[in-house]
Image (cartoon, rainbow, N blue to C red; front, top):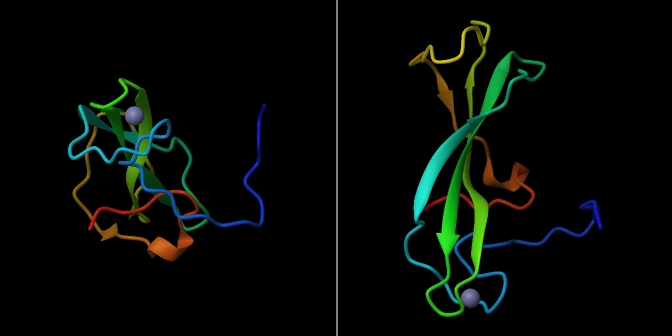
Length: 102
Ligand SMILES: [Zn+2]
């Protein structure tokens, strides 16, 4: 059941219920995922995840609502150590299935 996303590129609104199509105003909660591995520039990808619940049909789902690349100089070291450094907001066109917050 694992479908790889291939050539077709579709814009998906993470706020829209995958079951009935209702657009949810606010996520129930959000959290941050940090990729454990830096990319080739030494940057790590931060993904803001959100948990939604559809008020219409009750469906719950999680979706990424924002992605950023951070860092580039220091290694992603000990977890929990937050560096307020350079923040690179990546071009939305690089994103496959995530629509950034506007
Ligand atoms: Zn729904």
